[in-house]
Image 1 (tube, rainbow, N blue to C red):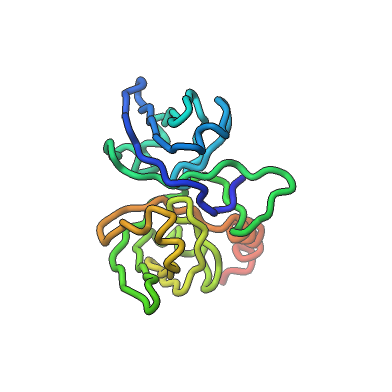
Image 2 (image 1 turned 120 degrees about the horizontal axis):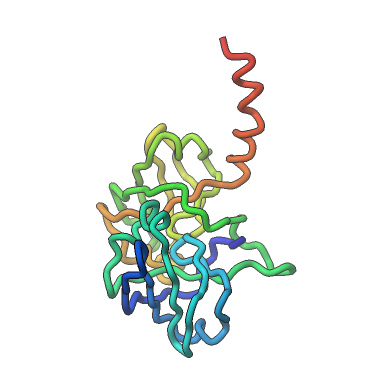
Length: 203
């Protein structure tokens, strides 16, 4: 589990083929010294296992299924990623509960400047993803816990404060970029629990 509060931004330094998957080597500075091989890390919202490390870099293996569900299959050397270590018992939960299981991709269709230096993003996503969102609910985009400011059948909006733009990759995100999307775990469970009752009373 994660919180959606980014601890560091890393840079993909190397990408190496690993069978049908890829090994991503990420330079992340001091964070690498606080991580062990086998630890789970949220890499732009996707839970990956550390398979190798040194004092400044972490390496992750992304299998074929992960590449199909994320933008890691198209990632290039030099791209930046949001990093967060797994939540520990007793840690403060400043964001919301995030599994690190990417549900799909959302495309940024607009970015508007907000007074004070913030930004409002409008994104397009599949209807199946938007149905699990509610106004003022939580959503995870590239590993960042955000509050939904508007929800439509196939689109939604989020507003980011200057601090979030400064400490995550959203500072450089622009229209046309795709981001990993994970809907709120609570919403998924509520839909699953309610589904049999809704089906029984349909019509």
